[in-house]
Length: 317
Image (tube, rainbow, N blue to C red; front, side, top):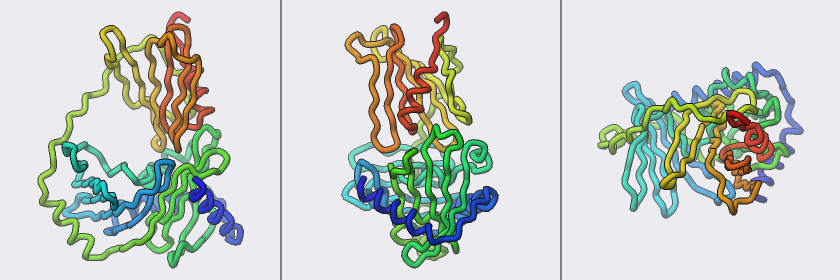
């Protein structure tokens, strides 16, 4: 965590010399440009992710070929975990495990969700602040802060390459501006023919079968979540059996940037009345209400997770 914090402190300090431009429209345009560049250019990024789990080196290649996105992510350590995208299919390969594919618009692993976000939808709940210019290595960059308007969510500092628009550094910050996770580009190659040549193999590879994802169930629970931060919407809900007569009911929520789940089950007699754990950006908050145990898990500050859990109400009481 110290390594992350020093990087953010250096970045913030450097910006004190930059001329700030706080216009929301300008900042939104910078973010839109980053998203467009990430989806349309041919490029290779070597980057590291820093989190409480450690430092992970990653190589990411991307291009649009024959009208569809083609991408490859490789974890550049002993695990050699690989993720491949071809069109709307994303395949996962890891030694010792069965390969599988999922449907999706882009690879979500390793890459900060802010890169592919819908900024037009997010601006109702987040402030976009154009902080100024900075150099990272020999790359001139533009810096944008993304802050939660109601202080119920985490915040971001994003540095985008001023020339290409691609992300150079992304820091996920808590409400005290302490960095929880960091994405940092080490080297970049843009519009290089070697990228498309390397991705040609992805076009011809036989992808593993796409896993069948059950359609969202239309289930009515005897409980509801009454204290959602603005912008969060229900995505899915399900009920799964965990014992002979025990069930867990789950509802997933997202605002397009962060996501979390609310889980309700019968309380265990030996369970504590309240418990909070956090690792990086993910919080696990559990509370008992009568015979029920409510657990909120996801990318939320602990105070917000508690607010959501406290707002769960049950029919008839």
